[in-house]
Length: 113
Length: 115
Image (tube, rainbow over all chains, first blue to last red; front, side, top):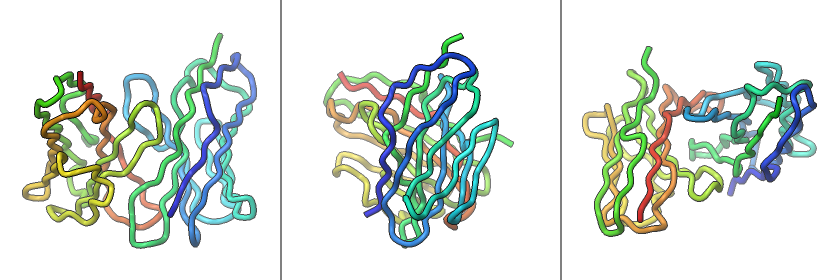
């Protein structure tokens, strides 16, 4: 079945540091890929998505590129801010009859001033 | 437009008791999903409603969990009797369609603690 493997956390960075959170997946066909974010005290919010190979999703300075050859969707940001502190979840929605999202385990990011 | 709302935000109950979680999806969203995150692990799918019908309940852990969506509007998830391993954060999500690029909108979650 479908699965998502996400970089283990927690991750602690200083403000303005470069961020990478690794995400790889296993799925049949061409799934859609998503990054969700959960800020403290809030629900899950869609951060960005990509629906086909080589697509780049971007939002709020974050980027991720759908790499079919390496089955990866790594999240990057060039300069993190304290307000980026949150839990980040990589997810996919497959092409089969199932329509639910399959999530990774989440990565807690803390950005220090 | 109101988002997905969940009640309560937190619940602490004793083992053996019953708890009912509620989810109000975004108006007009036929698709409603329940997910659970246990012990900081991955968020796992529980079940999927299309309107009032259960489309897929393959993720329900056992028969102590009962989900309903009467009238195709709000949904409830009842745990009876609750066990310690049921503790976690229960998320509800809704979407208009089920195409693979459709965004699912999530609620804030209900943090359930069974003691």
